[in-house]
Structures are given as C-alpha cells and as structure tokens.
Length: 340
Image (cartoon, rainbow, N blue to C red; front, side, top):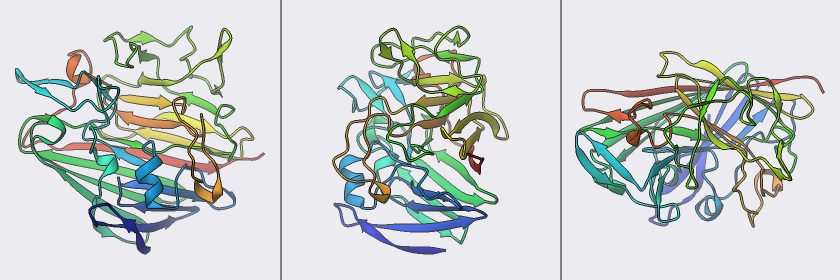
C-alpha cells in the first residue's frame, strides 16, 4: 500500500492517491470522484484505462474518466422525477434539457472520504444532502475497490437514505487495451438480447427491442467499427442484461485488444449495461497517461446500471431507494493476457 497527495480541490480539500496491487494487476485510485486513475497488467507495457497525471486536468478536461457516476448515473428526461406522487425537479446539466450523472456536482466530480485502505483495497465514502441537485433525501454511499489475483478489480457499492429517493451508481472507466489512438478495432461481446432505443436527447423511448438483425448486436465477439451507409455507427446505448438485479455478478461483456494480447471480462449484478464507444469525445488539449493524447473514440466504457430514465418508465427496473433499505452493486473488471 502506498499513498500520497495528488493535488488540492478549489476549496482546499486534499486529493490523495492510493496504490493497490494483487496478483498481476496494479491499480491507482484517487479520492476525487472515486476515480480509477491507472491500471497496469504485468507483462503489458501500457496503461489499460484513460487517465491523467494531474488533478487540474481532471477538473478541467475529464469526461468522467474512471469516476463513479451518481447519485443517479446516466440520463433523466427533463430532470423530472416522481416518487410516491411527489414531483422533484433535478438540475439540467446537459444541453439545458437533461439531467446527467447526478448533475453539476455529482459524485464523479466531488472529493470522497477514504475510510480504510490496505495493500489490495480502498474504501471511500460520500454523502449527498437532501435537496442537492434537486434530489430528495440524504444519501450516504460507499465504494470499495479490491484488487484480487490474478488480475481483477472488484467494485462494491452500498448506499442508504433517510427519505425515498433514487440511487443508481456506475463505474465509468474508459478502456483502451492496445494503446492505439482509437478502440474501434477492439472486439466486443455483450451478453444481451435486447436494448433500449432512445430519442434525440438519448432518452429511452420506453421500448425494449431485440438486438437481432441490428448493428447493436454484440452477442458474438466482433469489432466495434461498423458502418451505417457512409457513416460510422456510434454506440452510446443501454443493453438489457436482465429484468432485475442479481444477487451475485453475472458475465455481461468482454473486450479484446486488436492483437488479442489483452482482454477484459466484465461481470455485474446490474440489469443494464451502458456501452459507450467514446463517440462524443473531443480532442483533449493535455497529455494523458504515459504522455498519450486522447481524442475521438480513444476509449470505451462498460457502465453497469439500472436503465436510463428509469423513474419515468414504470416497466423498467426501479432505481428507488427507501429508508431501511440498502442499495448494493458488485461489478468485476477481470483482465487477462492472451497471445499476439
């Protein structure tokens, strides 16, 4: 276990970095946004996630690199939230029309507290007040990262509240297993037979459609790069893994580098999985890990979650959390080496 100061927030709060290791995997975590800042696999001479070496770059340029999105990840239409017949208006931090990833001061852009740490794990906590970003109820959340041999990051979330509210946390790491400029030639497999189509604001329509016969079909391993006529097809879509949460993580996705030398297997308890191919990334004006430059499609995300806009779709799995209940999620990122 090693830790040290990584920087200071504008309000003076210290941000520290904790180094974790287990088996062939080493991971660096900072308490800004509970960010997984760097991931290295023994025998592979490159980082496997996108990140920065300076806190200021996270504050100015990060599109949620490695952060925990919450208290409600993904989008809510018009920021409208109805619980037990009572309407709540959330902040509109995306295009002035949509609430995204918990709002202007969501969990991914705030300092978390470090509760405990050892050589292989760190436990972080955060609290959100009643009324913050428009949400009802105080929420207290905990995130625990554990590096397990041979090369797995176990992510465990818990949250409680003192009033009915919604909680939907998602780990938002951007993966690039090859070090190439884009991930378009990476191969992906997603264990989902259906997806939730969306409107122009990327808000689900409420329908659940089969992936069969569409460009959303990743049930067999294939490259991310696909075309729709003359245009490259873009991915920022929720996949329907199941109708409800599971007690234990189930396999949901696999990512392989173009050469096959590194793979990532994702398992989670969550019913949905947002797959994002970095299609909205802009050229970042500062260097990332190992001096790399990040632009369009530089990384991809696998975000286990409850479906987007679930409070406004009664047929979707519910994100409502009530007093006396505990929100729980477990997600596994398991890395492995293959042969080139």
